[in-house]
Each structure stands twice: as structure tokens, then as C-alpha cells.
Length: 349
Image 1 (cartoon, one colour):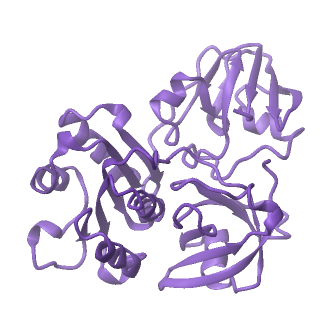
Image 2 (cartoon, rainbow, N blue to C red; image 1 turned 90 degrees about the horizontal axis):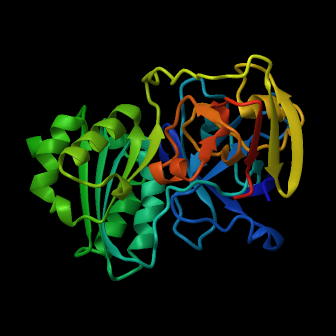
């Protein structure tokens, strides 16, 4: 079930001047719809917004709790500005069901290391809190920010450390504020990680790495872990773009010259549309299926994820799907161009 539902705001907690945590009340009849896995996100839109501006925000609550999202204001952001400065308890917000695959196996235990910067801590907090309920899990969190007053969830992280002193390692780094230990000053870039990780961790013994932050940090961390011999399937990534342009897209090849017949399956209903040359599957199909899920349209959030059942496509950008998902035929429809005369994708997998 992909429809938006109007959820009432149960709490708005000020985290720092430009960030809040918003908790939603979920009616009993929708409890199953909004049952989330740690690391997933919610897509929200403002009621009555004729432009249908929607954004995806990671859930920062542990498994089984009421859904809560962390929101940091983006300068000029139409949705984030409203959520951070105008939203009040009791207001209604249109919220789509949870989505995303940046999620751990909570039963497996093992060693997990999380590298986050800025608002990238939001899903990491959900994952870490939920994992630590399993006594067989060990967690390390490396969290980078500019200054101490910009740290989101500082008190919750401290409380989590106090509750699990032997199983949680928490390291804060600040890039624009001096720390007593020089090693903990500066950005979480490649050079810092090459020095820091071997000093703090037994890198080969870590079963899973969780990376969440701006593009540069995520790319640097992936490269450093690859140099250390960490297998790609053990590295999980969630991306936030912050003051950086995305890389050039992959250019499509073999695109039909007269458009393609694209069939989309969603909630058990099939619709076939003609998608113009150069248009994405999402762009073309939305004209007939406005209920198709999407949020960022930048290949980042993964909300528009679907699986190609038939035909050929080219995906221009991908910062949301893991290699195993791509190998299984999943694509981001906001970035996917048909490359054959007929294409079928399903959102129901």
C-alpha cells in the first residue's frame, strides 16, 4: 500500500537551531502500514501543496517505536523549512509508508561500524539503537560535524553509550572546532579515515559497514574500505548531497528513436504508456499513474525503486541501490531510460 495518509504530529523536538525530530501518531488501523525497519525512510508532503513537493527523511526511531524522522533545514528548502520552523504538535502531515533497503538483520548480531556526517546520523541512530537490543551485537559510531552545537541527537547518543558501555564505541569528530585530541579534529575524509580506522578498530573483523552522509564522505569511505580489503557486500551506503554537485550521469545508449511502450505494475494494477525518447520511466508513466512513488528524483533516496521484468533499460545515476539489488534487476525509475521498444517494471517486489 503506497498511498499517503494524513498523520498527526505527536511531538516536535528541537535538536539544534536548524534541525528537529518529528514524531507521528499512527492510528491503529494503519499500524501495519507504518511498521518500519531500522534505516528506512518516510516520504512526506505538505497537505494542500498543489506542486506536490515531497521529500524523503530517514527514520530515527528504534524498531517498534512510533515513526520519527530527523529533519535538518536545507537553505531555501520548501519542505524542510516548513518542518523545522512551522510544524506544531497536532498538525497533519501527509506521509507515505516506510521505504528503503538500508536496513540490517537485527537477529544476526556481529560487529557493525557506522560512519556518518551531519544529518546522516538519522538512520544510523535507528540502526544502532535497534542492533544493540541484541546482546550479540557490537557497534561503533564515527560521527562528523562542523561544531558541537550542530550535532544532532547528541544527548540520545550519549545515553545510548551509557546504556551499552562495553558494546558501543562512540567517536565524535568536529571540522570547525578544535578538540583536545588532534586526531578527532577535521573532516571524515579519506586521509582521516585511513589514519583513524586502524587505530580504533579491527577492520577485518567488522561484518557490516554503514555509511551515511554527503557524497564526498561516502565515496571516500567506500574507497578506504576497499583498499583495506572489505568486500563490497559488507558496505552499505545511504547518500545525502550537501553543497556538492552530483557526478556526470551515465549517458544512455541504444534508446529507441520513437519512444517505448512501458508497462508499470503497482499495487496489483497494470498500466501501459508510451514514454517519449529520452524521458525516464517515472516521468513517462506518471502521466497515467500519479500514484507512483517518488521523492528526490535525483537517484539518491530510493523511493522510486522498481524491478525490470522485461525489456532493456539504462540507469543514469544510482546512489541508492546496492550492487546485489542492481544485479537482481532493480532500478531507480527516476533515473531509468527505456532502451528497448517495450519495457515492463514492477513496484510490487
